[in-house]
Length: 315
View (cartoon, rainbow, N blue to C red):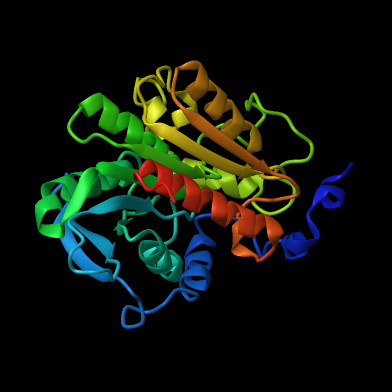
């Protein structure tokens, strides 16, 4: 069957082609168009705070606090990393989702406004995420949070950064992570090229396509030559050691360009003795959960359930 025949009817809007190719010339307009859909600073439900990144630049964090009874002693915590192909986006793109999630879970959520490529290529976005992770641990008493129940979570490029962050945190050994929730993560810089080991005629046709994907990876890569051990932090699918990583939830649509890289990553985690839960949603393209439908509802329930489990909640 052809991709459009496999597409769930709820996602027919994804059949509309993109407005333009992704290039350095078109990126400013794409950013402006996407960022115009976000809430302004006066409308958001988060509190912005600032910290200092590894290179002494300022880094903004967005805090989402639940309103719960005063007798609650500590809160579980989520470090959230937004999507946007590494080249656009802010925590505000998920403002209502994160605020509602904090209330639903009675959890503290920190969303990191990491710096974007190509202006800030690898490893700057990843180091910004690591700075946010360290900030959580350093402020855990002030924030009244339990870092033993810390989960890193991200969509798309944010999922790729979350996966890389879990590896980096493991290797540096300072900040333990209890779980990672990777939602259609962007993991393999080769996807969409002739060098990709993943060939599938039904993926990457509807929605996020190879040209945009390769542009974004080139932006993140910058001048990095792909010739040392850091390649697995740029592109977690290529990391040679996935052992001793936290319990992992990974979900992806069956029509997503990232389907096979995500499934392959989940299988490698399993073979490395990491506890893995993998979901492939039929008829779903990349970013399917931005549209209402039964599959979107199921995905939301799956994420809520796994977050509760990772943070020690059993209801």
